[in-house]
Amino acid sequence: MIRPFQRPETPELLALWLASTIEAHPFIPEAWWRESLPVVRDTYLPNASTWVMEQQGALVGFISILDGQFIGALFVAPQHIGSGIGHALLEHAMQRYSRLSLEVYQKNIRAVNFYHAHGFRIEDSAWHQETRHPTWIMSWQAA
Image 1: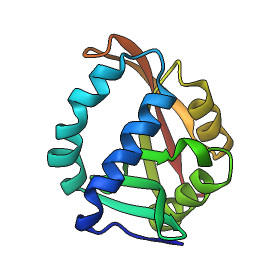
Image 2 (image 1 turned 45 degrees about the vertical axis):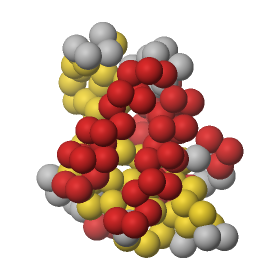
Image 3 (image 1 turned 90 degrees about the horizontal axis):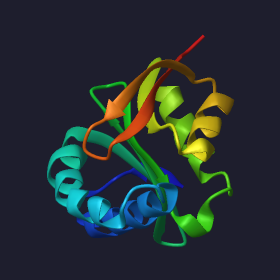
Image 4 (image 1 turned 120 degrees about the horizontal axis):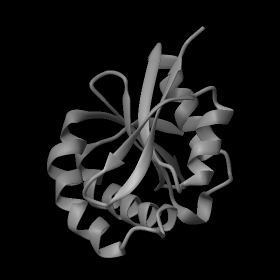
């Protein structure tokens, strides 16, 4: 079931984010993600439209959209990767927005391939100064 995120779920969502972002980015020190948690909690999450996927009362994935088009986060609990949750969450967003963009680390091949498979195309590259890793800027437009 996909539904809007509710503020009391913040600790559970942040735990999911931390576990899945560490899993997805082994090339970035875990400490950097842990230090980033307050920014996610206090800046990004309150300013995003966020939907969660819930199974048997537990959050198993979420997607956050910033500024009406930017995917700030799409994460699935590590034990549920490959089960279609990411696809369902992305499709949910694609039904609500006519254009979406995102930034993904170039070394996160699984994510780059996932977005390509859903019609996203690389528009540009960037350099993430804080982590010192290159990223792709990708976008999708409804037909």
